[in-house]
Image (cartoon, rainbow, N blue to C red):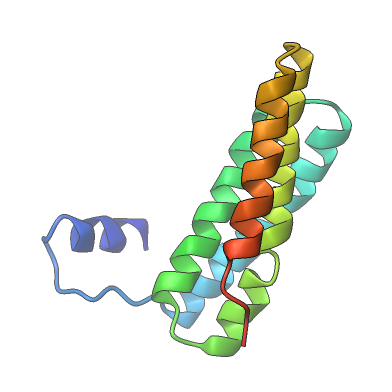
Amino acid sequence: MEQRFAACQAGQSACPFEMTADEFMKLQNESVLYYYRYMLLFQMNDFDRVVRDTAHNLRVSELVDLYYPDEEGRSSVLQFRPYIIRMNAMARSMQSLQQNEIANCVKILGDAIETIEALDPLP
C-alpha cells in the first residue's frame, strides 16, 4: 500500500488512491500492536518512543480518514484519534518537563486540546 500511495502522490500512477479492505485490516492490526507498545513505553518513561509510535498511529488514522471508503471501518479507527493525540501530547510534554521547559509543556498540552476540539465529529 505504501508503494501505491507514494506512486500516486508522485503522479506515477492513477489517482485517487483508495485503500482496500485488506490494507485497512493490516493497518488496523498494526496500529493495535503500536498501541500496546506505546502504552508500555509510557509506563517506562520512554517518551521518545511513545512520541514516535503515537505519531505513527496518527498517520495511520490520517490515511484511513482520507483513503478508506467504508464509513464504519473509518469510524472504528478514527474514534481513537483524540486519545492518540492526547498520548502524543502527554509524551512530548513529559519530554519538556524533564528538561524543565514548563512553558513548552503547557503549550504542547494547550495545542493538543485545541486540536482535539477542532476534530470533526464522527457520524
